[in-house]
Amino acid sequence: MDLKLVHTTPDKITAEMVKGYLEKYGIKALIKANPGPEGAFLGKFAGHAPFNPWLVYVKEDKVKEAKKLLVDFSKNK
Image (cartoon, rainbow, N blue to C red; front, side, top):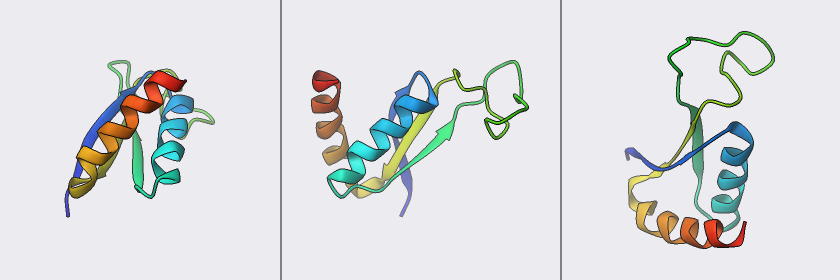
């Protein structure tokens, strides 16, 4: 099954929060750094700048459910 992008966050911390929120409701999520134009950031951030956008993916069959949950997440944060 393919993964689909459901959300973009401004940083890794927010991406981790979104991932945890989705997984709390039984939706497995994958987060991935969106590479910035400046290239790889070397250091403790595993080669990614901490403040570049991060992407949140879920399985294709969970997209609708995830998007509904993310509306609630955005309202409550």
